Length: 84
Image (cartoon, rainbow, N blue to C red; front, side, top):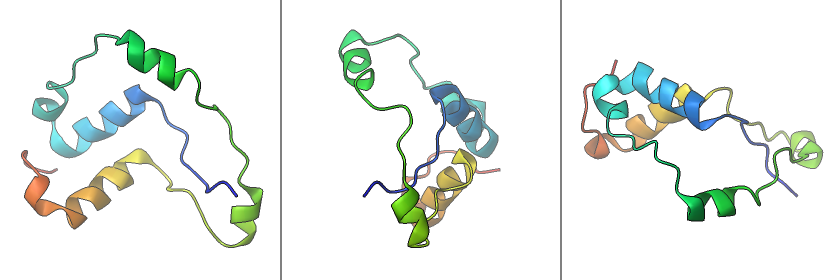
């Protein structure tokens, strides 16, 4: 059984982080492609069915910003930037 998952891009993830933690957080990103990581990520499926999980009531997160905010709530000591 595959668990439901949010489909998002790295750009969308970075935009959500910037909305929550500001440009100082996203300024730390290194956008230089890493060939080893690209080889790995290219093997991941892009669309996974999770119908069985849905029938059990499991749901994917609605957006990446809510994932960032949940992480901050659960790990306040890990936060290094002011949160919006």
